[in-house]
Length: 387
Image (cartoon, rainbow, N blue to C red):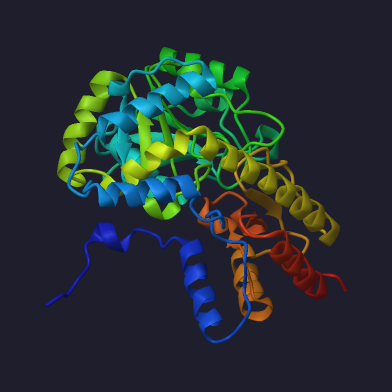
């Protein structure tokens, strides 16, 4: 009989956005019309070339385990993609295909961090990262960042806060929840600082391809020894397929492959064969059209939020989020978000999901839904907020 959860499980915080989504779904089941601006999941269906490739894979019998590091064809496709998009030479042997980017982050942390050590990251940042470290009996070293740093770590912040138990830095560019990027010159300075400190650079590039008015650089253009994590979920629109990847020094991939064999056996076979089609020109054309649609949505949402009285201290350059200051309306953004859901049937995410510093004043809006839905949300908020 189940009696008691472990201390490890008991001390993991819930993912608040998923709690909100669960309640939103319950309200919808009761007949309410909920506008979803909470979850970072593109509303577009999987691109047809990818879906067709999955069907062909099933028909061809590609349904058994693959190597833990992924099928050779996909590792080669990813390596080629880095040369085509960034001009960076990556060996297929440097690529580890994983069960989502979450699998990549878990393996990277498991390789680099011993119990009691820390990885430095920005506050605010994606919450699951610090929970992965907690599972490994390590921890996140959260460094407060604000509008003056574009909500990103800088070389000077890293130098100021580096400790004897700090082993590396995790950057996210573009970032969740803010949509900001680390400028190339700052990325260069950070990479140099970490080499001096003997630390490891890890970069979350999950939202590459979803930048507006510019293309993001990969950290591999600056530091070939960086651990770079990406996913088929965001730009490629394959959230439910649960497939990501990690580029790292070749010897590190071999070490992580051993762990992947034990933890995951292998990534989804069907998803891997489907993902081969993600790099085809007809697929890229679809993704670029969707990228433009996201830009239109971003501009519309930002304009609407500013008109309502929200403050947007750092303009989102990428991803599909707006991190807005709601202090004009509340001193408790957690309660504010739940009130918006229960009373106005608008689902947005409180800043408390992403850290601690000034979390009570911020909310994250996701523009992964249609313009019509965004307009509906803005209209409902106007009736509530504008007196």
